[in-house]
Amino acid sequence: MQRLLEIARIFIRFGFIAFGGPAAHIAMMDDEFVERRKWLSRQHFLDLVGATNLIPGPNSTEMTMHIGYERAGFLGMVVAGASFILPAAGLTGVLAWMYVQYGELPAVEPFLVGIKPAVVAVILGALWKLGNKALKGWRLAPIGAAAMIGSLLGAGEIVSLAVAGLLGTIWLHTSRPAAPASIGILALLSQTSHKAYAAVAAAGAAAGAVSLTSLGLFFLKIGSILYGSGYVLIAFLEGGLVDEYGWVTKAQLLDAIAGGQFTPGPVLTTSTFLGYVILGWKGAIVATLGIFLPSFVFVAILNPIIPKLRKGAWTASFLDAVNVAALGLMAAVVVTLAQSTLTNWQAAVVAIAAAIGVFYLKINSAWLVIGGAFLGWGLSQVG
Image 1 (spheres, helix red, strand yellow):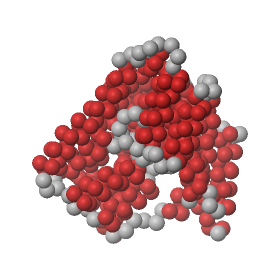
Image 2: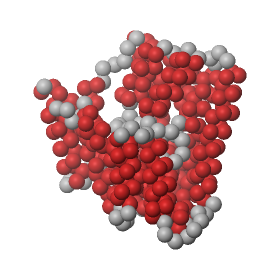
Image 3: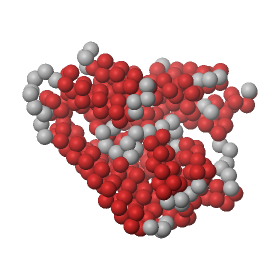
Image 4: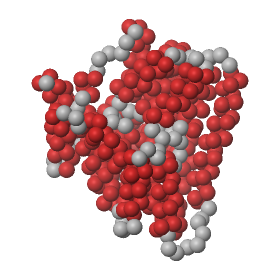
């Protein structure tokens, strides 16, 4: 019980300060649970990151579930995931209530000005530490570089990861001629998600007009098959909620996406906003449960498998390739985030201050994000 309370306390705090997207969240988790608390080794953390990229769902939220599982088993997984999701879902629900009541979102952008530059520094710090562990030999460097370049050229995260991981496995492996059955389990997870998509989509179509059941089935479908970035989520939501069902307008969808960006934690809490707009608080709860429930199932299946993958010759090569490819994707995030964020002297000052905090002062990444928010706000008043 003590460990479950500890997990709840830590991940609720994370849920309130985890701005910046999955790469930033994973960087903060590395700092907290590998560097400071030493709940798991950096190699195992890397294996979890790499394997999580191979299943549907929000990567950083699934990482919280993995860490909870490592700390306190199945119940630890449930508590960690729920504790991370609830603050963001609650804040997004409040935003949705204000939106419905007053017709617009509150102006919180000034406090977000300094968060992204700080996040750039936090991700860079994590890349440095994780890269030192992941790059075990010169053969791994081209794999990570290829994944980064592929992502920057628009190949997409999943394509870049899959190609780099599979070709990298062949490139790295030099001994055993056949892969153990463990790799097939990962493929089975992917196949399961697509079968879940077909079954849930059929049920959703049968549900017809909007109801709590049809709303829950729609978001359950999304959670079962969603790979990739927030842009993929937007495409699914627009195709289903706007074009197919007409439950919300395009303007409402855009406002919901903005609401999800305003709040910390997983961007999938956009579902909370939309559920509230469609069917009030009951809709918000059902939509949130629907989109996150598949992740709990996937992590519960995957977590016990990962140590077995590390033991096999082929599968260990596979994990090494996927791990470094995942870091390549994080590097691509840093490049694109820096290009869109470091556009004025205020952002540059926040980024430099955060980098000093990361690399020299060793400040907890959570405080760096909070400090970046207030420093960015203060500098924006200077003009």
